[in-house]
Amino acid sequence: MKRIFIVVLLSLFLMQAQSQNKVLSPTPPMGFMTWNYFGVDFNEDDLKTIADVMVEVGLVDLGYNYIFIDDGWQGGRDNKNNMIPDPKKFPSGIKALADYLHKRGMKLGIYSDAAQLTCAKYTASLGFEEQDAKTFAVWGVDYLKYDYCNAPQDVNTAKKRYKKMADALRNSGREIVFSVCEWGNRKPWEWAASIGGQLWRTTADIRDKWASYAPTNDELHRHGAGIFDILNINANLDEYAKKGAWNDPDMLVVGLYGKKGPSGDLGGTGCTDIEYQTQMSLWCMMSAPLMITCDVRNMNEATKQILMNEDIIAIDKDELGKQAKRVVKNKQWNVFVKELKNGEYAVAVLNVSDKPSKSNFYLSELGLKDKYLAQDVWTKKKYKCFTKVKQNFAPHETKVYRLKKK
Ligand code: GLA
Image (tube, rainbow, N blue to C red; front, side, top):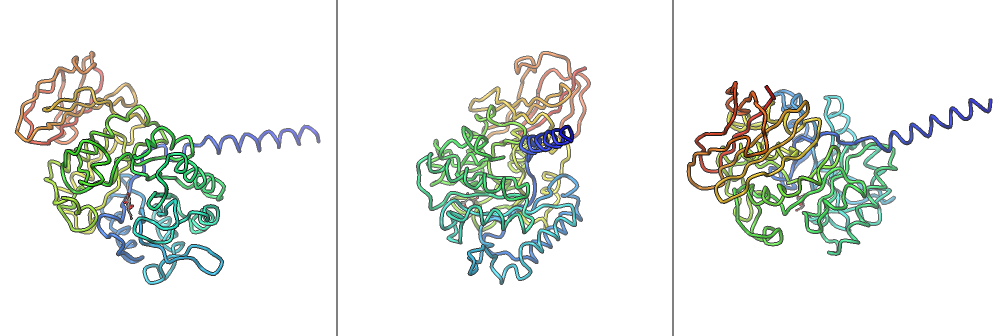
């Protein structure tokens, strides 16, 4: 009897330890986020249609399995202080939407803020962390983006407020991925994983443009951060990323083409398809979350080709979970090397300049000393003996090669 008791106790203990050690988001989360396309103007039918299209065109099969609801879903609190959705936008409630998605192999992300009001001035979670986390769990929510508008500037308060929600989510009875969104202002890469976050934004909000070239994150908040500005911050943070703990350089602007709305502000007048392909390439090299924000119901061929290239997605989702290192950085070129499973590598070369340019990099200069077979991830061209990247590049173009030892 005593023995059985001990065995039961031991297995309970082991189960507990296992669930605490479980990596909640072993690959970077992927899906569709409402913010850049809809702003705060969306409803349950919009999101169901988006989900249906994502299943139909094959985005879900490729791994884009989340609908991330951003700011604007909230309808305040009921007389028991439970958070409720805007009844006009979500007449069937959030649980019904979560059920709808789960039936289709998808997941639901939701949004709140560590203050009384969110960035767009909707009801937020400060003081109601446990209650809101339970509500999200009961609804079947799988992910929470937790913003930091209207909250004090200091890092200690930020850590405290984020930990409070992380703990509440962990005790909510459901596995909910926690996304820390304080825009890199307080170096979240140094603390977000240890307080219970699976990803953390590293910069100001992305706009649909190549670059403002503002030198600091502070100034990027004012001038608008483009793809290249964000790359320049996020690329330096490779050592902080690992399986289940990701740098988040913000949403994909691929396919927005200067659409009005949040990504259209602060000079977000749109990018070329080459620049969009560069964003996809480098976000995947950096093991970034992939949040599509263009209208997936009306993607053109170029947008589909960029977002739905399974070889580049495989680099993002690689099992090792390592973010690429930037091994060359000058006015003309950036070169990235990412270690992949089975001793493979991905190499990405970006022409930073505004002119067409020809590269000439020996792999041995990049620290890759073996003989390799290679494939260009975008053109699919194969190389039997790949020793250097000698190629013509359009302005802002990135080429990516997957290398296998010979
Ligand atoms: C902040 C975030 C954005 C978005 C908006 C919503 O600006 O950084 O990603 O969530 O709030 O209001």
